[in-house]
Length: 143
Image (cartoon, rainbow, N blue to C red; front, side, top):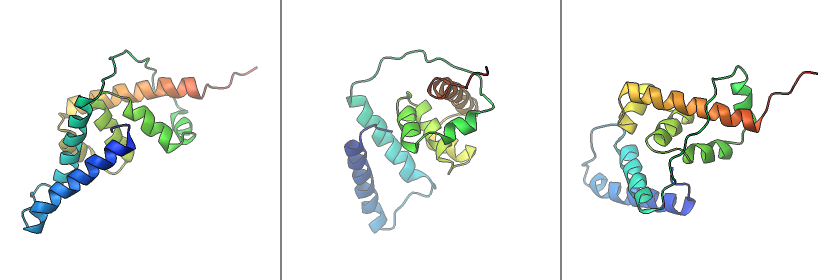
């Protein structure tokens, strides 16, 4: 989410250190994803202090039948780098979606989004990913 492993480690350690204090006294929040949400907010705050990329229009393509085989050709690092370049909250939505660990209700809760907004962000992100995949792995031409 930060695009910098050093900063990610700092946020991770700070989040755990801050969570350890109430945990030691048994005062943990009741909501199931409080730690994820806290870490996300820390990442967003860290990003605010950094240079921000200029918004740009990315090309979008309809999802292709070969999309899954194109994604299989990617190294997980390539997908992570592509997702980390997205603006928030789209970055958060895509990261949680492609982690494949959370259902839609959990993603809505963690990203603090409404269903219509999550749907729009994921659809737009998937169309942008498809355009990138088509450029990276062009379909062979029949002769």
